[in-house]
Length: 327
Image (cartoon, rainbow, N blue to C red; front, side, top):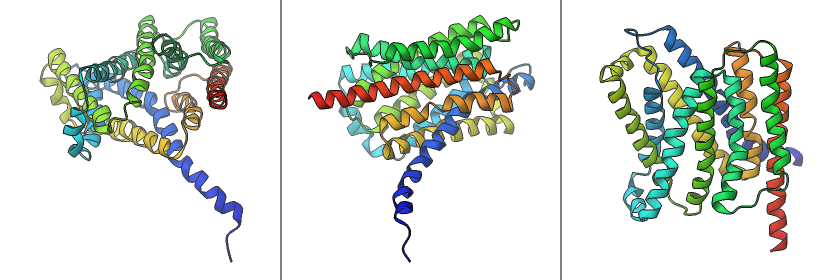
């Protein structure tokens, strides 16, 4: 007896959704797990020093991602580098500096001074900021629904903040907002550099492996300069190695691999729209595991924010269809 036609047709659909769902879960848990590491390290100092620093966290995380790309693609390292001229190397340097160095540092210190919920909402500004920067530097036109999208995202940011202020404030610090602004600008700028790199069709070992490994080594050097060699001795503690490797292998590498598989099996619009659910996972996990308050204002803010993201993606998709029809 043959299987119903409907089941056969739907089977590839849910299979395509597995890596996308895994990416949403892992990426959404990133801020919650990192915040838990920061808090746990502060409560369990070693010789008066927090063993969880931005240096060793990103040293391990980016080294794992870099080596995962370099080792399988080592045969294409030399040919890939040979493809690059001086302008290409400058572009890769700027992209890596923003997305693998400045952005992660700002992300870490913003999270250190903000709640996961506040930090997650603020970093949603990466989407409109990247659109504005693409207009400025790539001469791309803003999608028709951009200003509506920006208004919805802004409303989603203001609602929880206004509710917290009315309730007498919260634990967020001004420095956290400043770091968040730096992070938003850095990650928003990588949308411009990333689009330029994507048009070159360079191998992943050049665009991911080499920059991630160099960035990891740079974090290692910073740790030596700021804290001295003794800081790495803290990593001999089993629980420190365990939690950082879990963060690096499961969340950092896992989300990167899942995103790559999602892009192979789904179009960009699908990944972008469903990928915005990482915001929901981040806020829900922060409330569930870290006990951060989740009031009606925050829920309403998230709804407005997701609506703004949906409007932006749908407008982009409509513009692409219109351009294709006109051409």
